[in-house]
Every structure is written in structure tokens, then in C-alpha cells.
Image 1 (cartoon, rainbow, N blue to C red):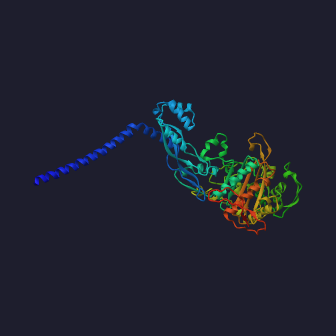
Image 2 (image 1 turned 180 degrees about the vertical axis):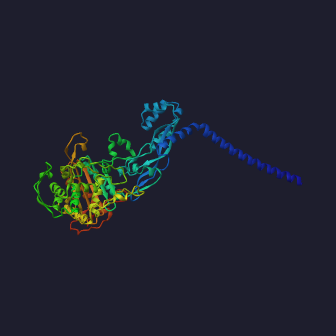
Image 3 (image 1 turned 60 degrees about the vertical axis):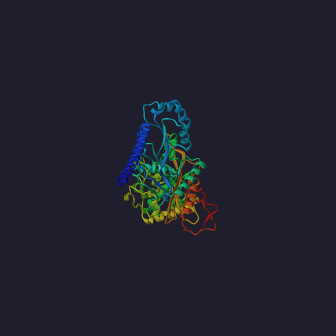
Length: 567
């Protein structure tokens, strides 16, 4: 009896062992079948995929997530996004003509080009990036042997054209080109994120206004910069015409120059906006005061050359404040002669006209070789902004010293992740007293002179117009001398004497006589908008009249404003 029980137990144990071994065998069988399927059935596909993806990923930056870029409020400017793409293994495509015909229909590619590519002795051929949902669906339905789909992480600019010139783009080799993508390429490749000083709403609004002005005035180009004159933080840097970095290749076909950030890389003769720099220099050396008088006959002869005021006007007896109010060329040339040629040239250097500002973007600086030759007429014309070259960001930096108590700043686009901070860029060029004096004189330009259209009720705006003739070379014409086209600008800061904002608006060859009718109205609208979004309190008593808040299409994070007033 005992023996029978023992045999039964032994039999049950053996059965369980058989079941375990059978289970193990089944698992191994499944693994072997799967390995056979992967290595034999799909082996060539994965070989193609691995080799092709390795090359493709290397082109896109090595497959490592590139650091992302955000506006000051957290809105994304440049991020990484998974995109679908199609590729092929030419060796696996049996009917190359049929495959080429179908893919040409689905992807909009040239059939003959596809046939040629499928005829090459290659394991991998990239067909198309950033596929649409419809393209993905149709490729899946077509079931073309040797054609595959996959995903890869690439650069994406969710705001489209907004701040495109600040962003730049990443090319097919995974290299940052233009803008922040170029300047911070090494840091971004290593995965470092950037947070900007740039306010999305102000940037968006500035671009809208420039686009409108470009169309209405039939201008060649337009720029706007909004900055903090005390810190150099750039709150907006806009340009028109614009481009979309997501489709940069489409724009490169017609005009590769569209990618250039003109504010930092394109030179211009500043014109009358520079008169404030000349006047501040003469004030700082005690050669003139705001009340120093000068008799303007309408012309002035210097070194055998005669210079004139705009439209050959004459103003009679003028104070230095009047000279700025009425933008008198001969009057500011008089201030320059009182200062002296050598001191004037030294001040031009001190204000940074011939050096880079240190902004964290690709930038250029002009040599100004002709001006440095030291001709008397060169100094005279330079006093009112002709005969030498600078960039818009250099002008912003120079005006920051007029506004903030006399110290040049280092402009900055990036707030978090900023590199190349150069304390030597922060240097005093005029005294606090001179800064206060020139600010009051520029406020008088807006209150009493040619700058009235820039005025915003309740705020002390200090600023200056500029209308400078454009040389033929600026227009791309190989000819000496100047055309009848002009660069028209207005630069101003507010509220004086404790400014929070500094704004430059510049238009290239607009169909308007002077900046009073082109750049200044854009400045006024932009200033109102900046005042609104920053909730800047007025520093002057408000008149009874109410000023309408500018209306803009709603950017991210800001509702459209209608039927509101600023008091």
C-alpha cells in the first residue's frame, strides 16, 4: 500500500517536471521564432534602418536633444519635436518604376529622380522629412516593399515667423545658423536651455506694426528694438520682411539675405538721431550749454564744402535746445566745431561706434576708414550722422548712456544661460549731469519740436528723429555718392528722467518725406503698447483727452484689447 502511494507521488512529481520543461521549451521556441523573424525575415530592413538612421541622426545633431529656447514668459521659441519621415532600401524594391510612380504621387517628388535614386547601389535612401498625416496614411496603405516609415527628433519653431531673426535655424547638418542658434550652438548642442529677456507680446506687436508699415509705406525693410536702457536687456528685436525658420529652405531660394539680423549685422548712416550724441559730447566737455545761441543762415562752409539744413531751411537765432528741436544740421555742426575735431572723434569712439556691443548674437562693426582720415568736412557731416556707419544695436547702446546716467551697457538677449558677459563694456562716457541735461533737451524735441507725433499723454518721452540719405552702395548699386532714398528712424526713451524703456524704429527707403511721417507713428504705437503691457504708471499730469490703447491681434497670453483707454 505504501509502495503504491510512493509511486503515485513520484508520478505526479515527474508530470510537474515535464510541464515545467515543456513550458521552458515553449518559451525558447517563441524566442527562436521571434529571432528568426527579426534577423532573417526583417534582417535587411533593420540593417537598412540602423545604417541609414545612424547617418541621418548624425546630420541632425547626433541624436542628442538640443537645448530649447524660451521667451521671458515661458513661451517656446525653439523646441525639439518628433517628426515622421520616409526612407527606402533600393535593394529591397523589386518594381522600381512602380514604386517611384506611387511615391511621386503620394509625396510630390519627381518620379525620374526617384527611379535614379532607387537604381543606386545603396542600402538607404531618405525620401522625405516631416510627413503629413495624409502622406503617412497613404504610404501605409500602399505597402510598397522596401519603403519604410520612422520618427526622428528635429528642431521646431512653434511661433513660426515670430522672432525668426533672433532664433535663426538649425540646418540639415544639425548646425545652428544665424541668430541664437548660431551664437549659442555649442551650448545648445550640449543640451543647455536658454530663457530670453525678450517679451513675446512686445515682439509680436512690434512685428505686426513693422509689417504694416512696410506695406503702407512701400519700404524696403523695417526694424524695431525695445530695450531696458539701464541693463541693456533686449525686450524685442523685430525685422520685416520676415521668414519662417521651419521652412527656411523655401526662403533661401529667393533671398538668402533675409536671414540676416539687420539690427546687429547691417550698417547704416544714422542721420539726425546722432545729433544727440554730438550735442551730449559738447555738453560734457562744457563747450556748449542748452542755452548757447547760434545764428543759422541755412548753410555752413567747412573745408571748402558747404552743408545745408533739410530742405535748405534757415532758422535764424537758435539755442542748442532749439537746434535739436528743429534738427538743424548747421547748428549741430557748430557744436562740433566748439568741441573740436580730435575730442569729437574720441567721443565717437567712446560711444562705441567702431566696436561690437558684446550682444549675444552674431554682430558686426564698421571700420569707418574714411571718417578716420580726419577731413574737416567729414567731422562736420558726422556731427549730424552722415559719412560713417554703425548698426542699430550700437545706436541703442549709445543712447542707453544718454538715458541712464551716462554709462554704456552690454546689450543682452538671453537672461538665463547668458554667456560672454564682458564688464569692460559697461563704461561711463558722460556724467550724470550731462545725461540729465541731454534727456531734458530730447524731451523738449518731443514736446516742442519735430518729435510731437511721438508723444504719449502722461509720459515724458525723450527722443530724436533721423532722416539720412542712403548711398548708392547701400542700395546695392556700384556708384559713388548718395541717392534720393533715405533711412528714416526715431529713437526715444521714457519716462524721462528715470527711463524704463528705450525704443528704436527704423525704415529703409519708405515712401515718406521724413521720419516724422514714417518711423515716428510706429514708435508712438509701440510705446503705447509697451506702456500698456508693462502697466507703467504715468509720470506727468494727464490731460482731459483720453488716449486709446492700441489694438492688436491676440498673441499668446494676452487678450485682444478694445474700447479701452489709458489715463
